[in-house]
Length: 159
Image (cartoon, rainbow, N blue to C red; front, side, top):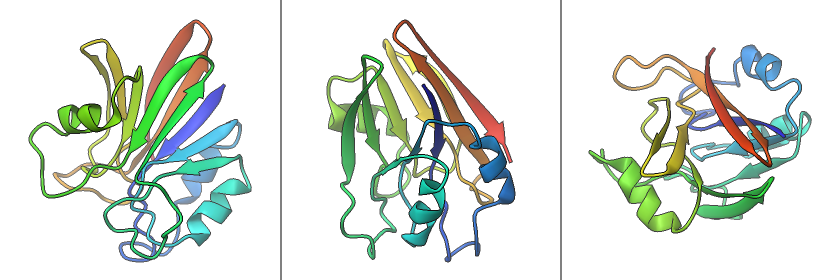
């Protein structure tokens, strides 16, 4: 299964629309996961035209009340937790979301606008960064996950 992952789209607060490149990168995905700070629900409708969307609320999603703050999913046998993150800058956001999500093998999170893909303590972490200019000179990015029953692979794509 190929999954498009994004977070911190901040529409309309920081930009008026998703970058066109997002649609190109996500052209052949089977599922899209949005890790919060959407800000306007039409973004989810636009993404749903490409593939089924699973989203969580971020700290800026006050208008999107129907979204959970965390989500647990099983994808191709892998236990996946999705959570945006919250509060001010956390020196170790991965420890924070790991504690909140419990026993999972892959954590998808956002909040920092800093893209990250790696494994820590036997758990894979993906922060797709942000589709808008981020903090600390981060470039706009999204993530791609390829998950099969015996393999998990992630990639960060600069927009």
